Image 1: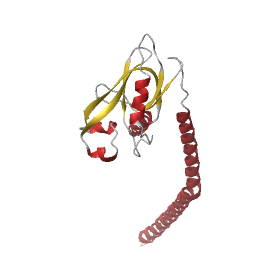
Image 2: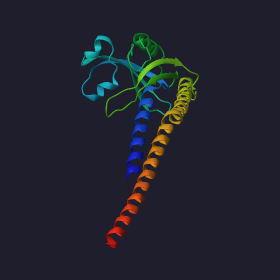
Image 3: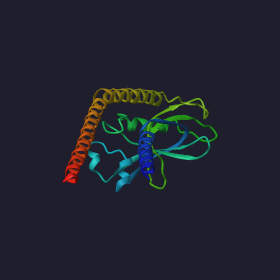
Length: 218
């Protein structure tokens, strides 16, 4: 039962960390932009964490949000929100919402004369929760089959792995230098206590045997 609880806890923590990274790290979609629009949005309940609140707008419960409509190569629709991140989390330092909306308008195309673009974004699209990934940049690419190498994500995970190995080595050194000597000292002290206790018990048995012998001799 304890092992089940331990592995359940570890799995839950791992899912939370992976979900956080999947939401926050940049991703690229190859799409065809078909339109842009602006819509008033109400921010209520826990889902407002999926909408950027920057500057004076942080306290607002409703405001206008710009959106970019697109079509994926398989024909599925995709909608991105276009909001500044400012100086807040996640740290993309995006301040060019108006410029990005203009770029998106400039590369709109039809199915008969498509222009394929790479949309860099973070976040998730959920129709059930009415949340949208936030577009960070838009650039034209050669076609729908272009593969964007995620250099930032690769560098991030390499650095994360190196940091993890470094911290693991430091932890092992801490255990070897500080914790293990204390454990050994405690064990040695306990062994000494057990030895003295065994000696005392043996002495008590011998004394009791002598007492019984004297009592028996009377």
